[in-house]
Amino acid sequence: MAGPTDRKALKAQVIHSLDLARASLGGEIAQVREQWHPRHLIQQSVEKHRLAVIISAAVAGFIATRMIFGSRQNSRDTSAKPARKRTLASFLLSNIWNLAREPLFGLAAQHLMPVALQYLSRFQSPPKQENFE
Image 1 (cartoon, rainbow, N blue to C red):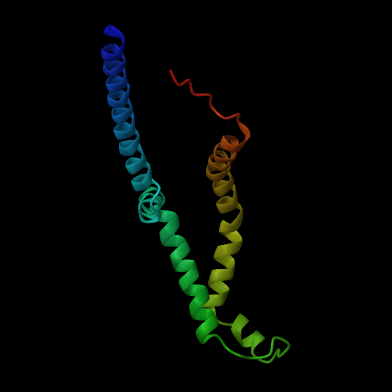
Image 2: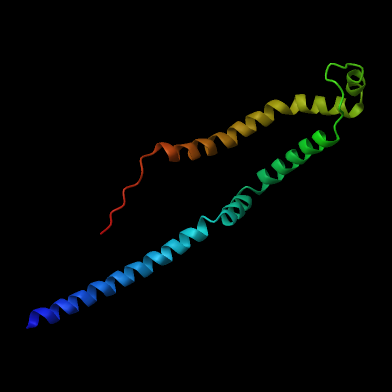
């Protein structure tokens, strides 16, 4: 008669350990859902790369402004092009860009290439094996 009580106790123990495992897994799933929520990912990205977000927003705003309020002239119309080239601002900006172009590209390559290579290396490494014991 000891068999059925041991069996019931073993069954109750297994059910209890299964409930604990489900509760633990439920907590992990909730944490993963919170971490992978799009709002959370965007907030992390903005906090991490604040300068890049500001610069890209400024460039996108500039491009949108140019597209909305830009002149609608024919690109083959050359009557306005020499006047644009003669402005002081255009002259200064073109010279500043010509002076700063090479150092800026060198600086970008120096700082962005290691980050890009590190990011891409994650996709080339074999997946980590996890032992479930």
